[in-house]
Amino acid sequence: MKTRAAVAYAAGKPLEVTEVDLEGPKEGEVLIEIKATGICHTDEFTLSGADPEGLFPAILGHEGAGIVVDVGKGVASVKKGDHVIPLYTPECRQCPSCLSRKTNLCTAIRATQGQGLMPDGTSRFSIGKEKIHHYMGCSTFSNFTVLPEIAVAKVDPDAPFDKICYIGCGVTTGVGAVLNTANVEAGATAVVFGLGGIGLNVIQGLRLAGADMIIGVDLNNDKKEWGERFGMTHFVNPKEVGGDVVSHLVNMTKRGADQIGGADYTFDCTGNTTVMRQALEACHRGWGQSIVIGVAGAGQEISTRPFQLVTGRVWKGTAFGGARGRTDVPKIVDWYMAGKIEIDPMITHTLTLDEINKGFDLMHAGKSIRSVVVY
Image (cartoon, rainbow, N blue to C red; front, side, top):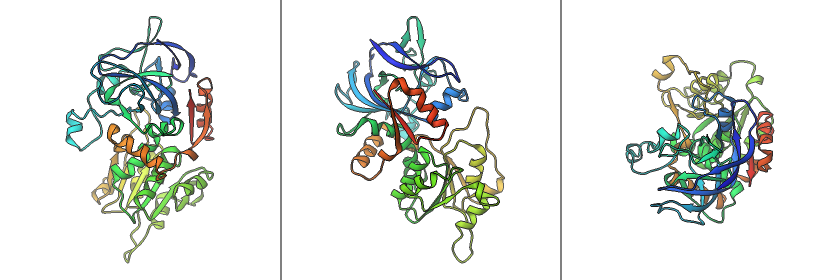
C-alpha cells in the first residue's frame, strides 16, 4: 500500500514529506493508521546526527496514537478497530528481562529494532527499490505503520488521539521516572533540572506522589509559570543564583537539627552531562537518588568524585520511565481520562504532516512544549 510519510534522508537535513510504499503486516505484526504523533527531542537527537544508533534514510517518530487497520497471523491481543499507542519499549512478557520483573527493558526484538528493521530482519517501508529504515520500532511520522504485536498497547477508545499520543513517550517517561524508577514517597523533597516536556511531567509525577518541596531548575525564566502550573513549589535559574547552583540547592533543602541539605530525589531532564553531575551532587548524603532521564550525545561521559557515591548517593538511569508498555500505558491513559494528570496544556502547537519541520523549528526556538502532528 501507499502512505504519506516524513522521511529523514540524512542527518541535519529537513524531513521530506513524500509517498512511500508500506508492506502489510506479517505474522505477529499489526498495521496501524496513525492519527496523531508528537515531535520529541529524541527525534531531533537522531536527526541532528548525535545519535550513535541513528540510521538514514528513516521514518522517524515514536510518540503516536492510532487505530488498528489489519493484523497478521497469530495476533491475539488486538484486533481491527482497536485504539492503540505504539511502544518503542515493547513488552513481550516472555524474555528473561520481562520475566525478571526487575526491568522494563524487554529484549525480545532489541537487536533488529536497533538496526531499523522488523523482527524478521526486513523493513516494511520502501521507495522504489530503496529500503527505508524503521525508527525505534515505531515510525509514527508515517500516516500508516507496521509494528510487532508486543509493541502495541490497547487503550480507551474514547481518549483523544492528539492528546494521548504524548503518553507514547513524554508523559510516561516523566511520570514513570518518579513512580517506577525513583519510587518517590509522600513528603519527599525533589529537584528537577530542565523544565521542558519531560521535566514538566516529572513535576506532575512528583505532585501525584505527594512530594512536599518540588524545585524546578531552568535557564529560561518563562518556564517558571509552566512549572508552577504542574506542581512546582520553587524555581531556580542557575544564571541568577550568584554562585554554584549545587550549593544553592543544598542550602535551599536544609532541614532537621543537623541542617544537612540535599534533595531526596533529583532528576536530570536535559541530556547535559555537566547538569547530570550537578543533579547527583545536589542529592542528600546517605540516601539521595539522582535519576538520569536525558540522553547525552555520542561519546559523552559523566563523572563525579567517588566520595559522592561512597557517602550514599545513588545514580540511576531510566528508559520510558520504567513503564511496562502494554501493562502501564493503558493505565496512564485512564489517569488522563479521569483527570489525575494533565496533558492538554502541554500540547502547545498542532500541525499537519506538511508542517512537520515547523515543529522542529519551534522546538529549537524554545517556543513549544510539545508540537503534535494530526493526520
